[in-house]
Image (cartoon, rainbow, N blue to C red; front, side):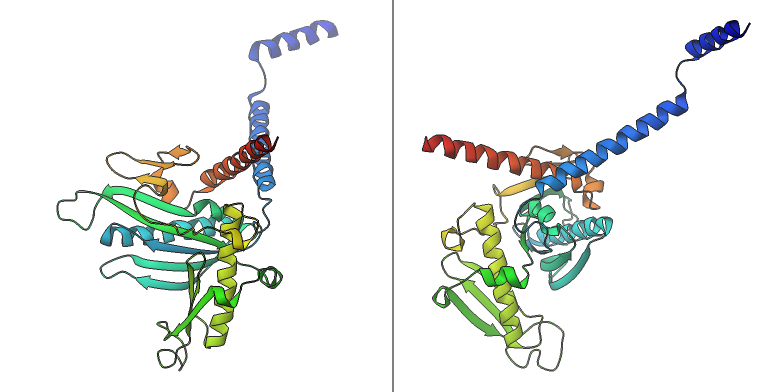
Length: 310
């Protein structure tokens, strides 16, 4: 009788199939494992010398007039949403408002581990296609904005980069920001140009000219080492001029709001129709894909170089 009952129970289990609760648990476990593996893979790709550092981000309106200035502000909100989702801090350093709407430019510092490693995927020109809200006939408008990203170097990294005084043009001016009694009365703002590359930085948030000069030099060095890393240059002296141009033909990513919805990265081919999600800060898939593309590109270049030396 006992064997007969066991056979009946077995037949019932075979008839009903696997327990759906167990299947659901196994599915959830597989999804968690997949996410963990993707996270591990991404973190393994963040092996650059400066990847773990905080980042300084500059967004500039380019071609497109008021629409471009509005686009620059939209990008600022997008990055703010990304920072909030990751628990990163965002501190505005400089903000220049547009005449009618949006921003001429904005500079902000993103604090968080691997902030630079992730955000360097955003360096380049971002192109927007939409119906203009600033034109009566709502015609389709193409706008551009440039994004520059540099690491925030610690004191040790700053000291490692040496610049010749003869390669620098340093000028002072009155600060345009809010602050203490010196603002707009004495020339506390500092502009530094690296003559060989044409790279320029400006610093005005500190209360003294000396402090702005020191911070400006640190930012210039950060920008130079970022460009050197991008160009795989041996050192700063080997850098070619590398200004990001916010104009047609330079874009790294296209954002199409009309006549259809799509965001597509020109470099990696990654695309999505979830425009609203991207503009809310859902950038992780684009950043992860960029890191994989960057690693493959560097590996291919190294292989070609090795083949050429044999």
